[in-house]
Image (cartoon, rainbow, N blue to C red; front, side):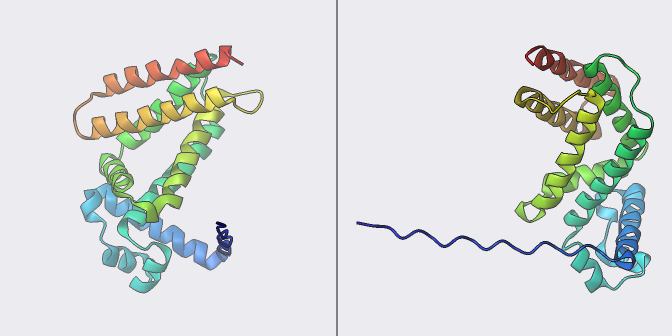
Length: 208
């Protein structure tokens, strides 16, 4: 008995790059989203109001961001990109790679701490995200990984063990943010947890 192989799934064409005008429109939308979330958190971000304040039609907004969750995850991506640029201009000062990562993540945490409603809205969006938001969630994860790897200051590409440690650090940072936002952890406890997990970097570095 023979089985027929399934035809290869055609690849979807890549989205064309945004024009300068489209990029400016997208920037306005993300700025409005962050502003509304900063004032009142997740529930304060209403798509109709975002469209009105951004000066775009509601249908246009939905073409850029199919749902509020898509919009807020993209807002987190935008916030992380700004943070990454800031950290590159002013890198951590510690000599030990693990201490540099801990210092970097605490700086990121304090930036979110200044805007707790915005932080809560973005984290809730990540929590609510389903498979349709996977590309945006993956981008947030890649940015977080890039921030951690930059702070490590590696001479070459990371080993599988180091990438595994980075994933554990990323998960811990995300979990620490959730527990702080829910009032179940103090800032001091968040700092201890992040410094503890960042010691994994020293362990993986010795295995190179």
